[in-house]
Image (cartoon, rainbow, N blue to C red; front, side, top):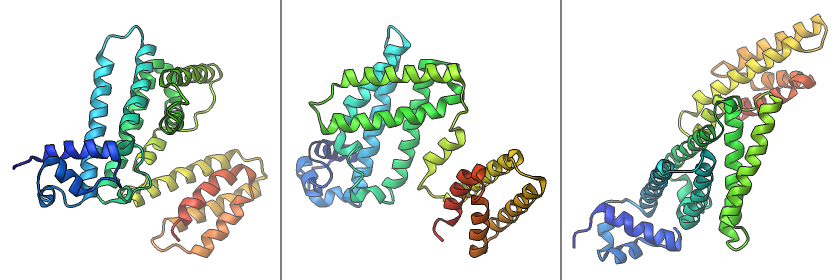
Length: 295
């Protein structure tokens, strides 16, 4: 019997969805397709490889359905956004063994699955951003990434309770609750106009965390934080002589971290000096964490 690759993916999706990754074997999938176990390995080198295909298929199906849902007639933008939240919870609940409960599985760091997971993470975040912009309009653009990350966190935490305690929370009531809280937050941000915490660069870092090319990203983060420290230094309440000393320390630190083989003890000493300034401390500690990571 000849079975196509897509038929194996459909069978694997069904079994992973019902039983989860650990409780499903290649033999189970072969039996469901009524083929020999070796026939599965003609298309997939391992169960992890097959799971990656299933994960990708389920994510694509989610976005396709979400796009279709967006095209349906809705009484208002608010109703459309509400339906998207409800659909998110329903879909992820149905496919929880594939889309949610993989964090502790050996598949998490698989060479094929890991970059796929990173791409999906970025795709979901961009989708959240687009939904928020459609809902609230251009007024929220200064706070778009702050709202996107807050919205993501709300979805993630309430999704956990919906999945783990199926009888505890109503999906519809939870979706309404989240949207009501977003309304309050958006209204407050627009009315008070605080400084945004996150910008496009935060999103870029988020979607690339753990991906290849980390050194290039690390360099960008270092430059961004050095620039932030430089700007803060210009406004620091200190005498001209002390400000000059701080500037010299910062210049020396910038020069040292740019070297291919920086002097570790010297860098630590420079950080220790800059950390003493309360106005600089937060950015300096962030920079220190990045520069000294892995050393």
